[in-house]
Image 1 (tube, rainbow, N blue to C red):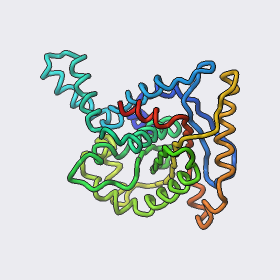
Image 2: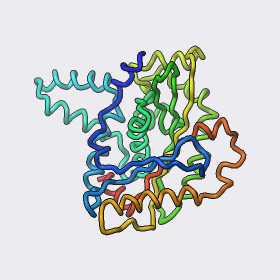
Image 3: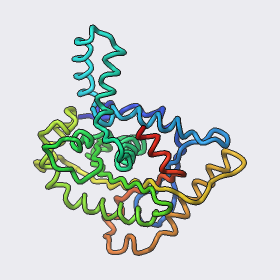
Length: 296
């Protein structure tokens, strides 16, 4: 597939992104390729929490179904429902939402964030559909929280993502360590685990050929990128008198958390691996209420 065709597989998440404040940090600790931050956006001194939750939930359908699968389901329902577009669309949306397991939003919240921001930051659509796999009783849970793909400058880039979400008052360093450990473990076992799902419906049909070629070792110029997304309950308030000051405080909080992390977090990890790790940090205030709203 061409770069242009692959980019057409991206879901439109502009409305979600508009309700976030995102930034990149030019720092060297913890060691890695990039350090990014995301937070719920503000208008003046008011946090846009309800808007963010609504738009995040609106991306569920894109997470569960690729564009081709959604089109097939939609056309089928459209015929069944007398070409009532609104009725058919609502039905597919409800099907997607029913795959969520009520009462345990923590992991699903983080994985949905990861799905969206792998697309936004890296321009890479999903190769593996995690949500249908997670809810399938006949399959074991796949190790990675996300596998995305794109072509760039002649390279076939595989993005492997892990998400960690912590509700505790402060567990940033724990979340960061768990995320690094998880992404290294997932990367080491990727070949074996991916073999199980290449010919199943969990692969985006448009990228099936890519998955098969990768499995057979025939995909040329492959490059792996490792992405750790950490969402956690922050206890330092960003409160200030203006929107600009609030956002600057958020950025400084993330900066301090990362640069204050223990040196041993990345000790023993080889440079070639470290040079592929991207960190995405999502600080939250009142994480419990955020997850309750997401799970409602």
